[in-house]
Image (cartoon, rainbow, N blue to C red):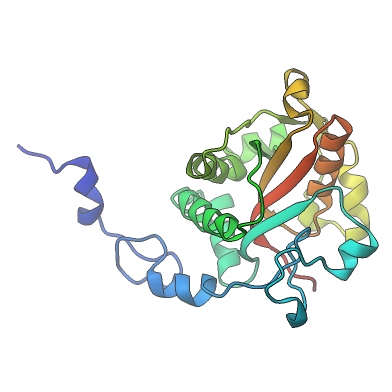
Length: 242
């Protein structure tokens, strides 16, 4: 009995777009990508929230909030807003174990990164670590599943163990904004063997969703205390202010 080559199996297996359900060979069909991801927004260079139209074309635009209270991180690049229907895709990966979405997210974010032509790529890429209890419950870190192909696509070393959880924290999404900073204060540590590797370097941190930026700000501040020169965030989706 002859078997089809592995490279051709995708043409034999049934597939459907994760958004519209249309049958095809792509996890996200081309029409859905154009409809939900095809329109680039002008965003704040630091926090990636949309900025007013008069800043259009300025990739170094900074929003008023970041000007008033500058975060510890230097840049944030995102592929999309965390809004329907794309938010459901994130939930399907994180809680529905649809790991086939991870390389799709990484490719979409890679395109967004490469569109920022004046933004230098980081020297190393790492991820926001999960606590041991949450990792055991979920079975995987969705940030790592997306960051692994992203690092390959960009040609950047992935240092998955660069950051560690110093203590368990409550789920940020369930907390009032005023409590989020207390929740993550001193919650992250740098791996002892990695201290020399970040001094004077540009460190990229990946997370699937950036909500208020509190977690990423805490991590950036810690990295800079240990000598990182620059910290950039790479997130698949950015939550808009309510």
